[in-house]
Length: 249
Length: 340
Image 1 (cartoon, rainbow over the protein chains, first blue to last red):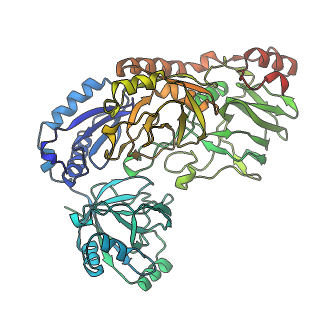
Image 2: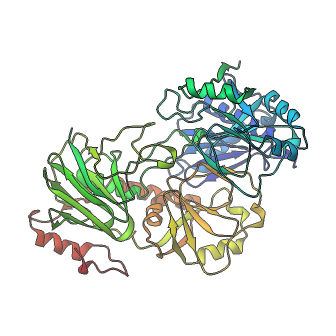
Image 3: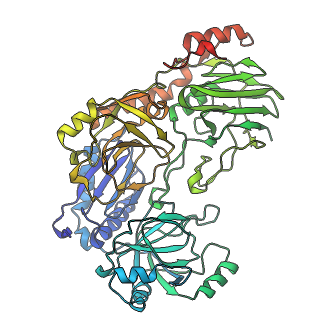
């Protein structure tokens, strides 16, 4: 894996739709932190030319109308912000949310825990310990609305996607690959392995908070039994799946 | 409330508008009408703002009845259209009286046709927009029996038309270099510009596949790149070297390299190219692209000035037909004279 300490951030135009600032050419934890911190810092400056912003695994994106605003001028402004600090060492913004999400691991509801553990060279018990003791961060949201890619698990979890797709893994599933956990927003065919199952809804289009998660939020999974999950599914109807949230200072 | 009662409808008809913005960070793409220019044209014909919702129709339209007198406009890909059996000109605005039947049939040329109503369709606003985004669970396709609510209309002017446009049969599409253009070899980019592509029938609101006979356009440099932001018009090259132009409902990020990005003002030409139509991509610099786009936008904003009376007597079907013969877009495979 390339060391991103040597990577010079790149500023590129994306069509005429905006400007991308990239902090690494591989998906490392440091480059993701840099992207989230940089986006937050630029957003805090309140530039009126920015219509909205987002962050991906390694980049911050600023949607700016390049038919109206010159890319070179924007690039200079962004360079000035880049120069203010070492973004790979930046602290993450305050006010993020820590989520504790109940999930059941293995068994009928998450049948690939054993298989994933084997691929990671772990016992099932050790795999369960890793998945429920690692504080994960929302690296980015995408593929489906509100759907988080969570990282970063220990390097032993750098397990490949399986070659054959599992035809239909349900919404609320925790699936594992490449040191990440994805929490499915909807039923999805996937090559990632189904290791856990929650009742957490990532996209609640009719609720007050349609997208509960934000990039930079932290997630901790709490192990519950399949029976407890069934009780949550029967009784909790606000989409939260019994998750708790607290604000990180 | 005034409504449009749907008697019968094709399989690809949905309410759209200019889409929902502000949710990229949450993984929700803009969506909205595939041919944004058609939305502006309909607004110009009805003398109303372009943010009002419209019906997008793919392949065929349907049969509709208004519960009160309303105004309509027809834009985008030309489809056969009749009001109570009399031909209604495309690219024009009309009165649809209470109880009259509007029948919109198969596409003659192009891909996406649009039905606009005075006051816009008053579908439920979800996340700031009325655009249907089926795969995300936002709205549904229109079904027979639906009553589509129509908003308050502030005008009664009808019988306007716009000059016909050439975007319905393919052609040259301008693109700007984008974030991964440099990852493609010079000769690959040159060959990409020289190639005449055919729009593949495999196309939807997410993306449109481009066919060509020669070798593909893959780049070894971009294998294993990190998934990155997608904007509408991005041309991604899949692993086997096939280009896909990403459209309104593409995902917000993707792992295939982008060779360039179609200018927003040329994206309607890509959207409207029928299956098999020839398309060619031409690089312009970012500065040139910005200037072209700015001029196009000014032209879109000036469309209301171009809307002129359709005929001296809008009730005269003969005149409507004569307009159609002169101004209608003509497809190579389909003679407008044979139909309607």
